[in-house]
Image (tube, rainbow over the protein chains, first blue to last red):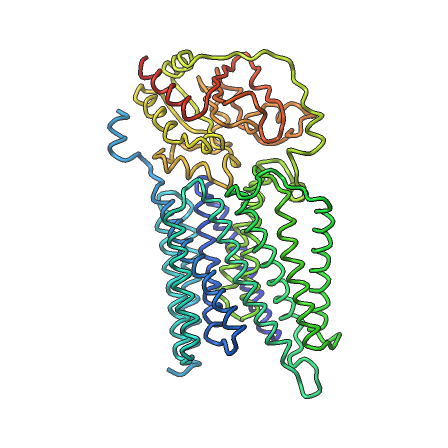
Length: 104
Length: 486
């Protein structure tokens, strides 16, 4: 790892942390569970690294490691986004019309 | 296409992916836009993954490599889909925790593979081919943090699922084992970094053995760290493990030289850190204090169980119904006991009934009302409670003064006024919902058992308080029937 790459990567890292603090501190407490499961899906991006490892695997050990990593990350991505969507569709400003009538 | 050009194009696609992640999180600032935010983030993920697949395809890997990639995607995708579609909302904390384990585990695996590759590459003289202390530093941090996250999250999942006792599990010598595992893990890591920087010249076997020692130490530490932590501290633990996973993923980004991993890991790490701080503040405890563990079993809390000796006033279901039916403002305070009894729908039905009578109804949600941050809000949203009625602690507390009836269901410690007044109380200083400021209070509770902290609640002997002893689900059904009769 040359110094230039290191500095570049560190810059990106630090700025992304600041961006994260800025964006996430605006999320209301009501949405903290979907936020957490949403960020969970985002860390599933490790899938990209796992795929690269799978493509480079040239021995059984690396192959096995890559396969497990792809399975873990794939579960993480697909499950994470799906369940977050499932939760968020339940958040409604007004109850469903039927419940609305009974309330009036 | 020329691999270098394609590489640039893929890098650009990753930049767009990272941008969509950040925009998606930004849209989470309101429940109205959050669903689109999540979709935007999912589009970013799809772009990144497809770009990587195109890049990989261009280097024409063997059939075996494709089998690993496609097979892994199919198995993982199917497992993820199944989990996400079938999980009950009460079980969200264990699912999130399980996903934490997977993310942390995958990040650690990437670094392990990189390390094994590096430690085997030698110059003709037998020294490490690439002396790189920084790279080794990122690798060992990734392996150690990822492994702690992996086992720690699995233990947290097992606890939340009820496979392990929710109460703090104190193993004899557990803290000693914990300390030893951590020290071994960290010292092996330091030696590895120094070797990477060229200070020592070890054989490949020794380097690999040191990494295995660091790995095993971290795996053990993950277990011993989470085992002694009690169920009600889970919101803090899950948030912290979330931050760990983000860190591990960002480190993996440094190791494999991929900027989108760094950005995504940093975003997740920031989110986890913020939530950890919010949760710890909501319990008025330091993170170190929670990790040392055993709130309910600490000696200090036993000593503080001095009852003030007041008398408890019981109310009948009809009295409670009359109070509610003729109030003009009612605040419902749900606690985890409500979710355990699966009584969220009953609460919403009661609220609908009261609203139909023109009563102003809202819900006061304490930050640690569930088993993870924001958990209670999701459970109530599932029961069709409109989100504008869900009020955060700081917004609702001033309103209790103007509240006719505060209805506390399955919540205890978060309503305990001793946290404000009694310096000797173990929960002194914890921010609470000021239900005792309401004109009258109805507490629905199964029995006079103490809350998680094992502390008496002076709210129950307050002359304004009526105790309605019932299981949350059955009690609400009776209350609904009684209100209808009014």
